[in-house]
Image (cartoon, rainbow, N blue to C red; front, side, top):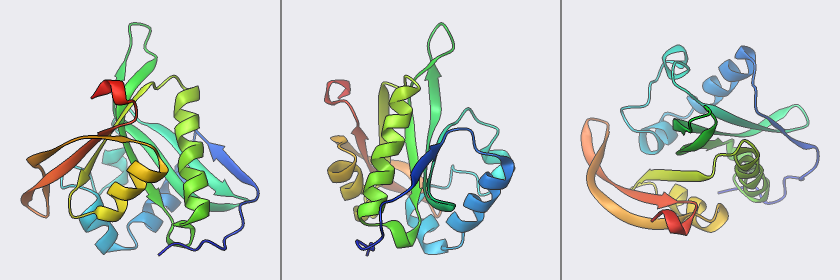
Length: 171
C-alpha cells in the first residue's frame, strides 16, 4: 500500500514535459507489468512514440527532482477556439507515493487541468482495478455514472468498466 510517511515538500507541476521526462516516466510506469495489465486496456499503446501521437494534456508532479505522479487527459475535445474542454483522465502514481503524497499529487493534477480550462473529465476503470476505482472516487472526487458491461479489452478479454465523471452534472 502507499507510504503515508513520505514528506510533502517541494511538490511542483510540469505541464509541458520534455521528451527525456516522458521517456523516464514511460520506463518507470512499464517497470511493473502487473500494474499495466490491470490499469491500462489493450487500446492504450505500449509504445511511447505511438502514445504521443494523440492530443494529450499533461501534469507531471515532482517532489524536488523525483517524479511522484503523472496524470494526462486523452481523447481531448476542444471548443470552437481550439481550447481543451473535455476528455478522459489517465494516471500513474509511483509506488512509494501511493499514500498522502499521491493524494496531493492527484489533486494538483486536477487543478492543473482546471487551469487549462478542461472542465469535463471522465474516467473508465476496469472493475478488477478496485484500488484505482476507490482512489478516483474518494481521493479525486469523481462521481460514478455506471458500470458498462464488456466495454474495454484487457488482455484480449472484453471486461466491465466503471465510468466516472468529475462533475456530477455530467452524469
